[in-house]
Image (tube, rainbow, N blue to C red; front, side, top):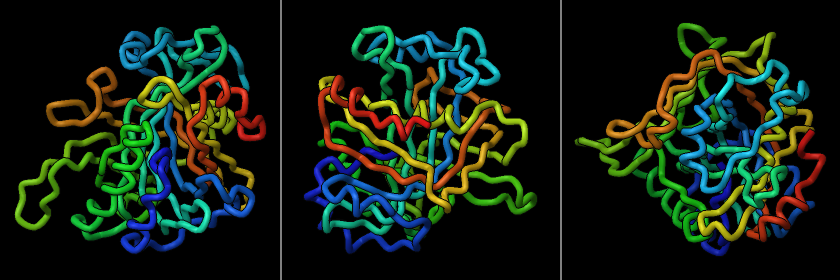
Length: 310
């Protein structure tokens, strides 16, 4: 989620379109006035994807993740697989300088532990797909709201596509028959047409999850994975998007649940990821996020804040 405001000058065109209710306050804008900041209420899940499939999608060799480190992978990890992280959530109070967007929905799919530097030890994330959507019940307007940040992000080096989110105004929603279970759904929007149909909206992924007292992972698992620098599309530069969960309203929750990933012809994500992943581990929280400008990948790795890693 998360790397769509590369060229912030376009934002002024978009501010008047975004109409959203607050989710969580942005507390880092004051300290990072020249960087992109937001409060991101999101859910992340780790999927065990066959290593060969993950390698097909990564543009560089994969590292061997520290599956024997109990602080990161306390229950180990399925053999011959590699972690892939999916996330979806609600970005509130997005700022850079005196420019601001009230809120957007976003989702992403990343492959962590990519060996961009080919040094056998420094982890990066390969971006598989990023999605963005307006916070608006009117689907056409939400689609229009998503076009500018999606276009700006793509120009800046990140492939970002307009998407439809369910719920359309929150990070996730309780299931009516069981309020202790939650759901979230992401669809890529190619042709919106809610009035007369048909629409072209292939499924990306959906989540069904709940809190758990026997989690597969720790909070540190997620901070270590999601704070790795992201390799941009030009394969020459990287970007740091750092998440902090130290505010009193962060409300971190470890989750368990099912993730369904859809591939063509009915889906939007690569066939190497398609499947229904049951009983997986996740994490929900409201995190403060700082997004930095493009920089060399070596610099991005060296400047990653240890405080964000947990």
